[in-house]
Length: 260
Image (cartoon, rainbow, N blue to C red; front, side, top):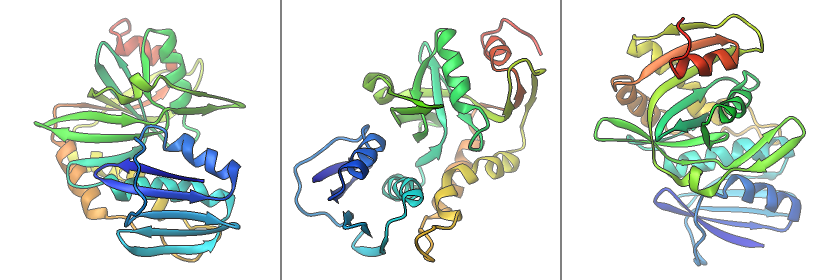
């Protein structure tokens, strides 16, 4: 099985002999267009459980595939093919209402998905479920493309392709310290740009900072691109909020129905 994806300005060729793994990868890459191209300087092959990764003609991995390594490897590939001084892939969700977008950050399990699902009940659209391709244009932050594969609890669904492909201007960034039903809502606005950069940075390079199970090699990432992008972002006119507490109260506050 083979497929070629346009990711950023680059082409990734995927070849895989395992149907289940192939389908998992395709769910993550579903937002990217397919092209007919037989050769690429970026190659991901899985053959008899051996994974080989080539980025920009340089072999990065040639190891036995561990299932737990697949997700961070794919996220690393996407980031390397997109990241530059004006584009960044971030582990995050995005919701929007009337083209006004909110970027949601938080560690695994902090409540990003739950907040996104609750926001739908308040009239919001989910534009990105898990990772977001962000771009800075004309001193504004936009969602270029959002991940459409949403998995929560024991359920999964695919978001609307139109919603995930829509260009959304980001007006607020919410960093979830912890979301919980019934907890008292506490919101802190962060103004220090250095603090903002340090807070967001781990969501851009998490796949490279964590160790792989099946290899002692480290996945590459250009941290200078990340720092430059985030330095630009931190100077934009965007609210950066640290939040803990009830998700319904948070949405009410965002909609101006509740004062903190």
